[in-house]
Length: 344
Image (tube, rainbow, N blue to C red; front, top):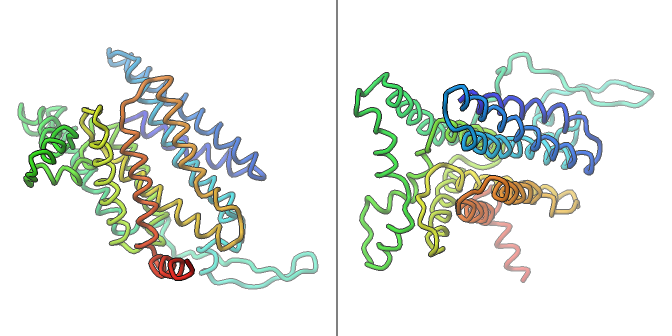
């Protein structure tokens, strides 16, 4: 928990210090790489130190801290990077949707008339999150609080110690179970609901904190453009597609749980938004896929260094589902698809 909180704060700090001061795409790219490396190293050290202090095996904890710290740094830094390269974070930039809605007044600077933004002193100190993001995040948070309280003996007595294990048995997704269902042609409810319930059950509190942190960051960005039902649809469809993709790999037998596949779906929706904005500005649209490219590179690097399972299959399938679905559920997306079909 401490490692998750610290690496989340440092990711924001590094994004402001490194990416915020970079000039041009090459420097911004180098700043993002430095951010991910620094946050992964910090996560490694925190995980190892806390494990040693608690009398636990330090290497698994250090690997987990490095992996999640690096991914969290990549998510937070990736958002800052893409805002930077698309011009959204520039002072008074034309692509800044917030500044465009604020009251403005012209003033003369160096013989030129410029527009100055009046600050809104009545605005909330913390930007509100879309309701759909809370619909997804609150169950994860509540369940983790219950599981952690039960494991610590605060509630539930002896039965509370097994709440997380019971939840994994009833709600985590099993590729072997799905293959058996497909072969038998029978689809019981307690097997089908796992396609959408596994993202809300996590293996430990650190896992939950990282997923929720990335969900809040990406969900706010996507939710500012997507309707609530569309954001929920991206999350649900990405969850299902990620699970089915893992099922399609016959050599995979591990249980799938945690919110990363649908979160990658939100990264797909995020990439779609950047893709359309870059299309409108005439810039190179491949920049929209910079974030997922870094995530793939990070997955490969962490896999080589620390060894990871096959979850990346579900993650990449979730990304593809989120990106493609956005063409139909984003505002004006379906009309764009129809226009593209007519042109063909």
